[in-house]
Image (cartoon, rainbow, N blue to C red; front, side, top):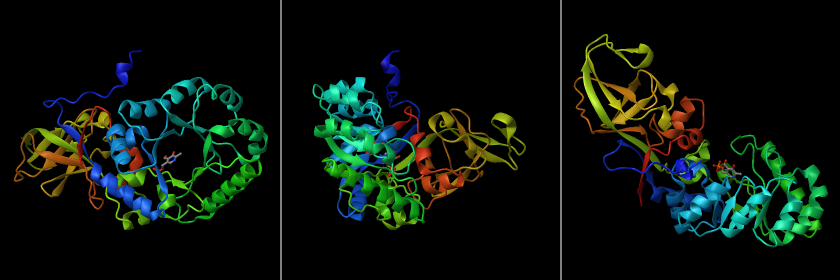
Amino acid sequence: MNEQHLEPLKPHPEGRALRAEVDLGCIARNLGRIRTASGGREVWGVVKANAYGHGAVPVGRALAAAGVHGLAVSSLEEGLELRQGGIECPILVLGGLRPEALPAASAEGLAIAVVGPEHMAEYARILPGHPVRLHLKLDTGMGRFGVLPSELGACLPGLHQLNPWIEGAMGHFATADDPDQGFAQRQRRVFDTCLAQLADAGIHPAQRHHGNSDACLRGLLDQDTHIRPGLALFGLTTIPEGRALGLEPALALVAEVARVKTVPAGTTVGYGRTFVAPQPMQIATLACGYADGYRRDLSNRGVVGFLGRTFPVVGRVSMDYLTVALPLDTPVAPGDPMTLFSSDPEAPHGLERLSQALGTIPYELTCALHRRITRRYFP
Ligand SMILES: Cc1ncc(COP(=O)(O)O)c(C=O)c1O
């Protein structure tokens, strides 16, 4: 396969009038807020999934300039993308790596999470020739990646061999957003027990990090040296503590009106004719659809912002287009910008309220923003 297929579409000044506007200043300020909330701990800024849809390289550069310790991604490819974008700070691949990929990680100076006991012997064979810094992931209760406490004893000989390269130990909370902190506290205790077991075996990871955004906001950091926030950097939150901290959403999704028409009562709009104009009105068509990440279940439900008001999305959202109804007396013309996702957290089309209304989380909405959408960055 031609790797060019993986590249984002290059924006053209005369191309589709759909853009994600990303305020990098907000992201830097959010970093400051979350760092303060964590008591000044060092930050691994999580920029996986194209920085939650915000654009990995520009966001990574902004975070590096704002003083993160490093950036965390999910895969080798995401790490390489940052390096190719000229980012030189530490990069941690959270999702682990097959031993065959260690030389590539070593060549680019990527640190790797060891996500299970499987490949420790092979790692120990390859690392002397291809050194890589390692972060041992412990499964303290998330139940996906990580060495289980019950496996740790059997792993100690393998970890001994890896010890020269072990830089960190990490876990991940399953319920940091839950007001009942019982399970999170249990995860902390499991983490401590595992760290003590490692220490008894002479393994002392210099870095310890178990906390995502909500764990920072809820003070679940205990003995950690570092934090690993993602969502909070983008100014989004699913818990009240996030708003109280003053996090600023960094992204707005804006589409210019492509066509406006005035229709008589009884006109139907879109696939399935699910909207029938109850009176004469204007229908604005915008070049944004579910292929861009604007959810089809916002058909006849979503609203867009325009002229300081909101107007309803009517008819079905299709692959590339959606339609908005406006009264006859609203001045609207091709080229006018309408806001599909607002950076105002109080707006009904702000990402937090929208995701709540859809029964999902803001992560899903931003991560779904397709690479074909032009990203425009503000300092
Ligand atoms: C291992 C790991 N650490 C940290 C994060 C960041 O979490 P959040 O975006 O909730 O801060 C994630 C996100 O999914 C993750 O998978």
